[in-house]
Length: 127
Image 1: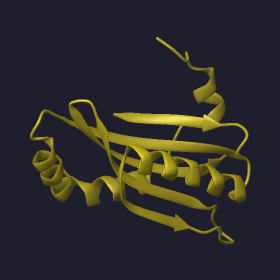
Image 2 (image 1 turned 90 degrees about the vertical axis):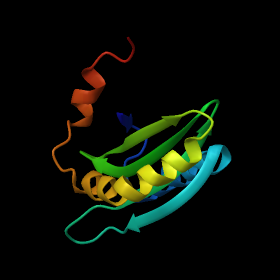
Image 3 (image 1 turned 90 degrees about the horizontal axis):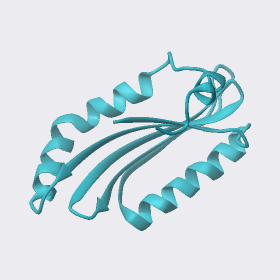
Image 4 (image 1 turned 120 degrees about the horizontal axis):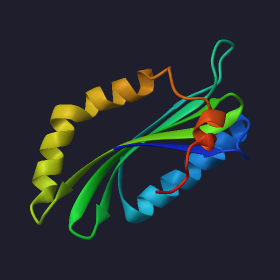
């Protein structure tokens, strides 16, 4: 599953870092954080953050790869999620992460052609 969230109140690198810290705290409270990474702002690029975690739910585990970035001056979070259901989900999730995790991270961080925040906001917000 791919989720795109827009945060209108996040308009600079400091606020993006604050949002990353809030998401990190949330993930720590509901699962185990496997990896974090920060790409600081450079002359040619904007800051970005990555959080990879396994979240625990009732009867399932969910791997979440969250990329935070600024797009058109607005904070965006792109989350790729993969769920494993059942009592023996731990082994299945570990196997899936080993086989797919590094590539998912590379692909997520390489995404460049994403809808502008204004386009995302114009979509229906509920089904």
